[in-house]
Length: 92
Image (cartoon, rainbow, N blue to C red; front, side, top):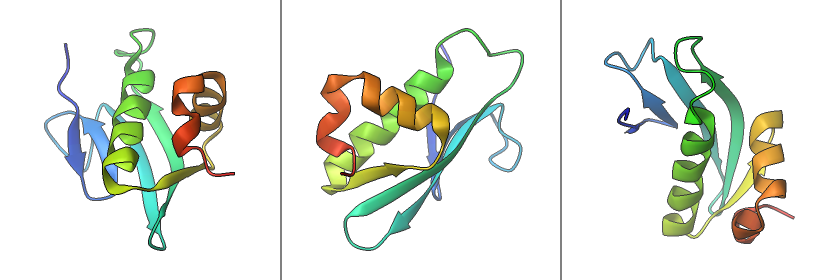
């Protein structure tokens, strides 16, 4: 199991925040919106559900902060729309 860490405007896996082996980046936009703009998972971690775990961390973060997520990243958009449990944080 890989530890998902919180950095400035990102959730990531790896020892070096500047060169993570997986990450989901976002921008805090206004008081109540998060723009999810990029997801990356290295070849060594692909196929393990890591990107989905990163999205789950972002969803939890949005709920804790009382924010909604505007997905600009196609992967994040698909995950948020597919999972009915995430619709409470999906920006309309």
